[in-house]
Image 1 (cartoon, rainbow, N blue to C red):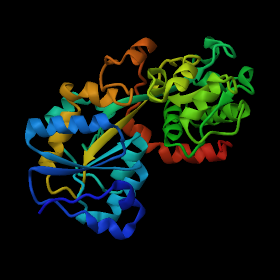
Image 2 (image 1 turned 45 degrees about the vertical axis):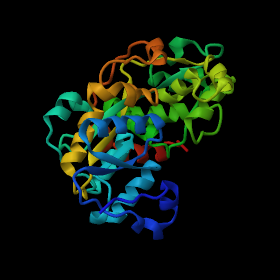
Image 3 (image 1 turned 90 degrees about the vertical axis):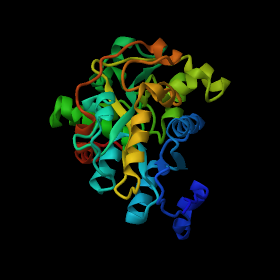
Image 4 (image 1 turned 60 degrees about the vertical axis):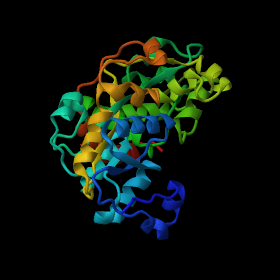
Length: 339
């Protein structure tokens, strides 16, 4: 029986169409649910098929929608692999029992221990950094040299933040909880809230534009958002704006991941595992991470934008630990006034 996939947006918008996907009983094809939306991913899946003979049926949609969809489909899901941005989402999917454990020497060798689940339920595939990005006309580099510095009163009226619903911010606060403890993190959040120049933003790109245009002196954003703009992926106007924004790596810097795992419902777990092994291999890493100006699992890679930003000291806290602290982080953000 062949797997039939309709347009992802229509499927997610219309629950009655969930049955349009049928399960695969063959070993030469797998279904992939992915929160990534890059044409280059399709080229990498094609290379995987050429290398292994395993066909990839891809469904791309927003991460949270994919989690809910997979949970609703249960054992009837056609998905063999689930790929999500941010460890908090991977941890949530694992907590909902949507993954099965994988024991793979290749994955354990390719993915550093701090970027994978200790039970083998999910594995990091790329890295993204959340760091201060500043306008040198408004603030000095030393004023934003650490996450803690963003709460300093000298930045009052100069800081922009994304809202607390952003899972990226939740993971950053989880990192601070692990690094600084509860009391210090609470004080840090309140200090940053007092420094806000604008109401909180709903996404990173407009926030970076605001920094470039002088509405904010500094913002906390994911590295790939600025990478897209500086590389010209968002157009010439954004590329010009992004030239006014500089990244400052804290020491250490908070690292998050895009990752994936074999679904609980998979009928082709061996083929699904082979795809994860392929995506984490040197053969695919450059293209998979570079598609979104993310960092590969190891090193900086060959992306000229990322190379221009230079090296960084990665924090030692594991991705798994960040996921475990997510609920506490979100509760603290709400209690401390982060809108």
